[in-house]
Image (cartoon, rainbow, N blue to C red; front, side):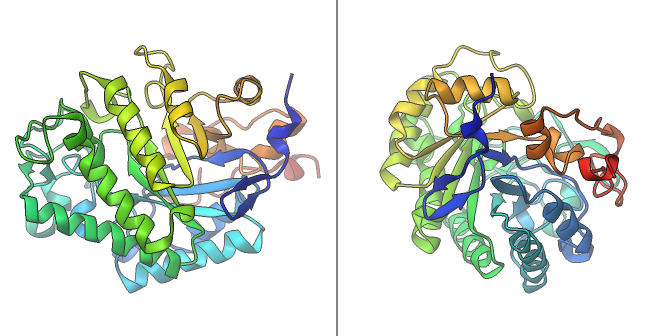
Length: 363
């Protein structure tokens, strides 16, 4: 039975969300020249403003942070102005929107890097995965290990991007610490074999994520800062030998920072929820603010988790792509539009802003 509380307002820090459903970050590779979000992006997000909260597609904090073609940035005046059109459009519809801040680390290609340089990583270990570049999928390039002073520069890039986000009209930011990208590369020992203060122990591997989150929180306020993690997801060829110990520590430390939410990919990203044994309740108990569950949620699972007190908000991804009015459809138990997977990455309005609303089919 559907819990009607899913469709009632929820307080997230100082914000009041219209419901407990969150549009998860979804990369669509449609940024315009200069990696600027265009008018089409404003339409796309505004169409989905009935979500309790929108988290934008992953958005790079610097030129070095890019790993796929045509993904937007948030480090130039033009990009800030482009995002402002998006946030204005969402707010005009009564929606709330956070931007997901991203550094891909080793998940990149020399053709996307400034001056064709090598991607950066905690250690010089190439990820056995592919990126979208030059209009096709290509193997990642060999990365180089970051120097300590470069790490400080990246922390400052996150801080500046957070400031830019507020200038662009966002309600807050989500620090992307999941899915095999830079911050998770430091967290997980399959990618991080450093012997300095950013490698080895649980505390050292968590250091960069925590320093970035602290910098962002100091810049824009903890009540505007969320973090996404994926403790056991193998996304982008990432692995870890001690996920429970590592992420219990992360949850404790993020709780001390007082951030507004913890966004947890439960299981494999866009895959099974039970790929590896992991106690998500431990994170829930350690982190006292809002817990956002992600992966395979529908009204039935969300209702069950809410009733058990296991999560507060529920992030859905692909259903929001093909159903701009997803929340209304879930509330009415109405059929969902079928997803056109051929239009997910890159392209035009087709498969982006042309999915019908229920009102269109009933008019």
